[in-house]
Image (cartoon, rainbow, N blue to C red; front, side):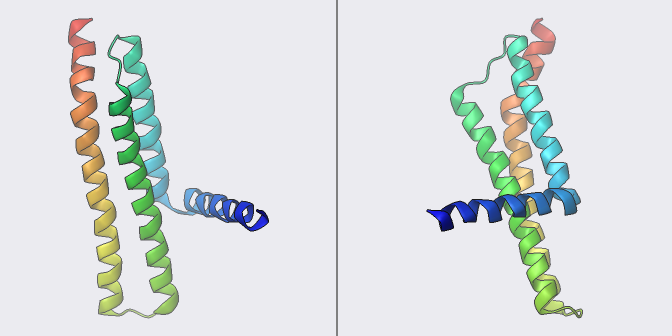
Length: 126
């Protein structure tokens, strides 16, 4: 049980490192906060999100945050293993960055698909 609890300590430390040192991760956290404010704010205007819609939004947020964390870990590992410039190292880092970009685009599409009709309804029906 002690090792299990220790693993959470390591994970929390990793999350702190990401939040402190990675600008893109902080940007994603701001996007998370804005999404939550908009989602909960829609309740005030009678545009309630369903549990399923919230689950989809949380899944998109999670996918994006996880992909950014993995991208950062891959970049740091490549830099550690191959500190000098190398074309293959650059390709690896570019592919990891592409995964984050794809996850972010998917999250934006999901957010727009779920939130924009509700925002529009809140603006024009109230």
